[in-house]
Length: 261
Image (cartoon, rainbow, N blue to C red; front, side):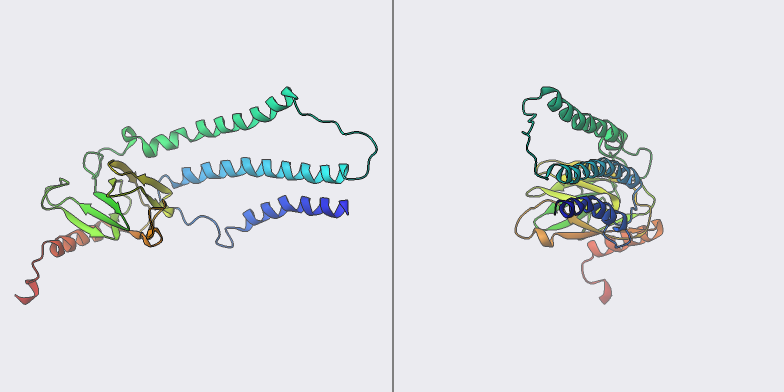
């Protein structure tokens, strides 16, 4: 029986690795990356997964071997390692070094995405001139664009609910705010997630590399209606974006009598 138990334990890491290898074929892996920095995020994830996977295989393999070797009846006394300071330092130092390695590896990517000094400059949209203000509240998303004056917070601002429309292959800088509780702006295809905190204006940026419609979800439990707090990001060509802006302006400042004239 000990051989059977050992074999079953040994099959666990094999099955685990096989499911990861086949996950993409089964459409159980990440959605397509359409963000300029998504490749770096995926690379960091793969690095951590390989490190954890290696540890998992070694640990499960050792467990199967120990069960097979030491489960048979023996007449000698067991040897305990409790209080072995050298051994404890060894198994504490390894994960500590691994965490330090991960921390230093991800610092550049984190800084490029999160630090304002590294935000895109010189383009159409910058930290000083964002494309829009994203407002999260229970339980919806609203997007406020500056009007013809290009200044946010004036009477000619345009507002759109549910759908965040942006041009493709353009550095998009925007401000994220919450109107009530903590929410989280999450677009899986962009590999972009950021909490929206009450009382704070949080700058964000991304560059979408492919046109399409992508789900925008709240990734922070924000109340009873959290499950329905869904929106979308629609990435279009520059020409379509300008056309959409003109239509939004016409709709926003309409007095309802245009079609009667």
